[in-house]
Image 1 (cartoon, rainbow, N blue to C red):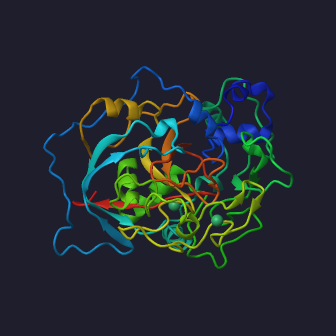
Image 2: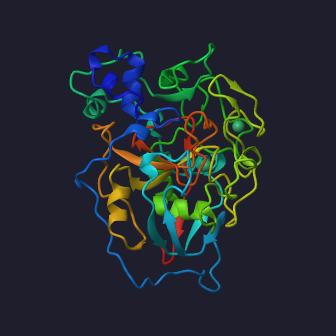
Length: 385
Ligand SMILES: [Ca+2]
Ligand SMILES: [Ca+2]
């Protein structure tokens, strides 16, 4: 997700850091103005839909006697209108149109996956995350425009993007390179850079997680990533026409979610208690018992990001059961990137910028992208996935 299409279509003028931004496909608060302006493709080149079922037979209640896996809660099945709530002035074009969706009941982690949980996975499997691996320029350039210059070897080292508060006032919020820094040695164990560690942060959400890292964890745990529909349905907590998990009132935002308070991105007054990530479950849960569904860190879903998908699924004018999204990625602003949908926004979200602490908010994020504000949580179906 990029802030300025034409700039990135002129690779010869790219700064090295911007090349890396391009490569990892930033999905950050502040690159969203393009989404507001994005013209939806008129062609149906990618999206397909599961078979609709006019007489839905849903798994609603948890089977009697079934005990939720540790750390998970039951999300009763049901039907809802996915997408922007009517009158939501903060909603972006790609959150529309709304469309009727039904999902079977499922189990969901009550919190984002924590550093302690992820560490157990690493210790048992020896898995090495994407941000810790050597960078293969030949693989990376496949996601870049032709003739993109190769950054120097000193930069093409294992690393990730960390947030760096600008020293000076920011006048152009489209230039996210002012507050994102590619830093060699940054990964889930060193979330704020190589000099940082996880001491005392066992109960914080794990970050700098690429899509395949999340999948590897899911496979180890015997779980899976939620679809976008499952995630959004669960985040709503059974509420209808509510923008937030707690209702429609923006007033309680800082008491219910870890977002950016103050002036983005230069001044964070931490009205909600945290300027960076917060321990999971630091704020009240929604009606399903889910914590931090908005704010703290963005969360991966299994759906491809496809800018035409909502329009096409809405045109079916029926309720879609257990949709799994488009069958291929499609984003005119990131034509070279393969993006999955992330949900919920993060500690960096502010109304002046992206306001993605709403249940319908969504972003595309490239598969190999790992950032300081991106984590995940898992789900599990009945019968077993
Ligand atoms: Ca905060
Ligand atoms: Ca979250």
